Every structure is written in C-alpha cells, then in structure tokens.
Length: 215
Image (tube, rainbow, N blue to C red):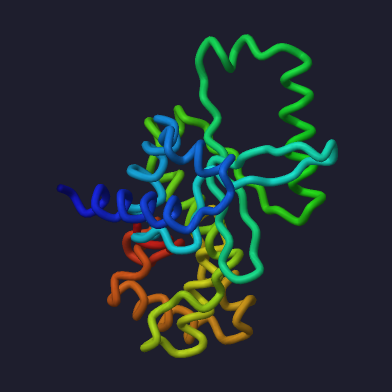
C-alpha cells in the first residue's frame, strides 16, 4: 500500500471516528467523490505531505438556515479555507440558470462568512497538477505563516513565506523590496535556499532572474 493510501485511509477513519454529526457522518460513510480523491492524490498530498487541519465534506450553514457541504475545509487554528472540485462534463456544461445562481450565491455566502474559497477545476488536476500544487502551496501559505524549517534564519524563513504567497516565480528585486535588504544580500539568501533544495531557479542561465518553490 502506498504512503498516500495509508495516510488517506487513516485520515478518513479519524474524521469518521471523531464526527458526532449524523448528517456529515452519513456522507463520509458514502465515500468522497472521484474528483476530490484525485485532487488529494495528485495535488494536495504531493504538495503538503499530510492531511493536517484538512476536513472532508465539512458542514456549513447557509443564510436560509439550511446545510451545505464543502468538498474540503482547511482550518488551521482560526483559519477557514474552503476547497471545492469543479467537474467539467455534461453536468457542468448544462448547468441551468437556477443552479448557476445558487452556485454563485454559495460562494458569496462563504466569502461573507469569512472563508477563503478556492475552486479547483477537475481538468486542471488531470492536465496541470504541478500548477495546482503551486496554487495549494500559496493557499496554505495564507494560513500557515510558521511552517518553515526551524534551521532557517528569520530572513530565509520570510523569503520562503513570501514565495508561498505568490502564484508565480519571484524576482530578487521584489524579494529585496519585501525584506528591505540589499540586492546582494537577497541573492545570497536565494542561493542558499536553492542549495537547501527549497527553491529552484525558474529562469536565467548565466544569472538567475526568477526563483520558484521546489515541488
């Protein structure tokens, strides 16, 4: 059994064991959808390496006093992040006006209730898993500010956090402006993070122009 399968089964079992809400427990017993499992297998687990603070089929209340369920809720500490996998097939293409409006209203209600909401297209999981992993690293980075190796200095750790918050490679100049240090010192920081295999050079041969998180 793969490490993903072991961790996934333990995670699901723990969620069911700790759940007292009969509505959510029934949904968990039915199993997660194919798109959600593929997202966890191809995107979340390779990028994050664990399922800490992640909750499947999380129940939320809407303004009509009803119940809705997020595919995944990421809740470290007081943070509230929602992830939903958007399929693309006859069901999605033929979405009628009423259901389309309900979907938009659902997203609005989550935002107004303090959730950071992240919709992920299923075709992107299949065709562009690395880009989705980068997106998830940035998503998690909005909530977990201290999740960096303890051996890093403050500036090195903040450079990693800065890279996580962006959805694209970073330049030495913008990192220098963020850290308020010289270009020379910034390049030394970046060079060390590359040596530590935390960052990769994204562009530039003779002289690195941009850097990105290693996935």
